[in-house]
Amino acid sequence: MIRRIQILGTKNSNAKEIAHRVEIAAEQLGLEYDIEHVTDVQRILCFGPRLTPALCVDGDIRTAGETPTVKELVGILDAPIQHRVLSTPNRVKAEAEGAKSTA
Image (cartoon, rainbow, N blue to C red; front, side):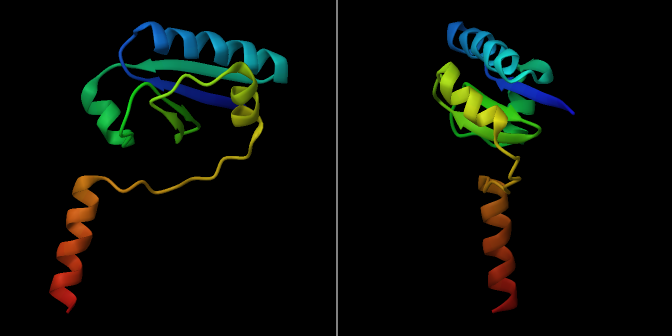
């Protein structure tokens, strides 16, 4: 299975370093992967990270606002994906409005 890896944020040195470390970790694990740098602010906001750079693996945010080590990335890439629903400001507002209308 090919892992889809996305690095969210500008192509600054931290994002480039994460990409380099991801490549090393993936090679150590023998993973097939596609890596994409997402720099468009609107696309980044759709993922919902509070900080950048952020690392997504198969659509799941795994890190945000940090530059993980190769060892940490090996663990991240080797772990099963646990899809989570992130709370975004619009989602929280919509849920709050829905709770008011049912009360």
